[in-house]
Length: 117
Image (tube, rainbow, N blue to C red; front, top):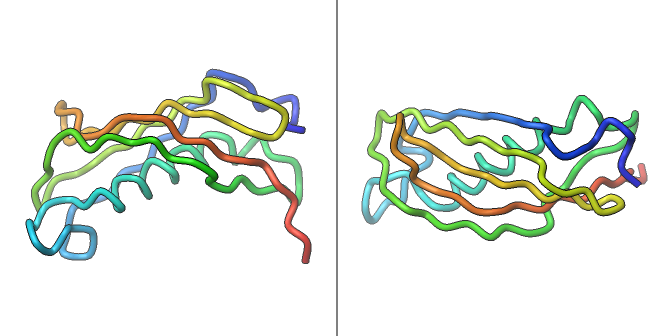
């Protein structure tokens, strides 16, 4: 079960600079896997403060569309908003921007687990 503080409306944000480490080599633009990672991180950040001690959230599903390219030197900002809680499963709407240009959107699901050590 999700802790009581985890409810729709929680938001997270994460940004990165497009550089040689996160571009698709064949086109020199921000890569789709890097965008998805940024969206997952924004989602994780959005609920991290509400998890109970010993809990973590892990990604279980992505449904993302990469809408536009971003060049080296661009600052990409991913936003995530929690829209549904079903027991320990969390659904986020996610979006990524290069300045005012939307470059990606979709949904991301995470599960809250307690790892065994």
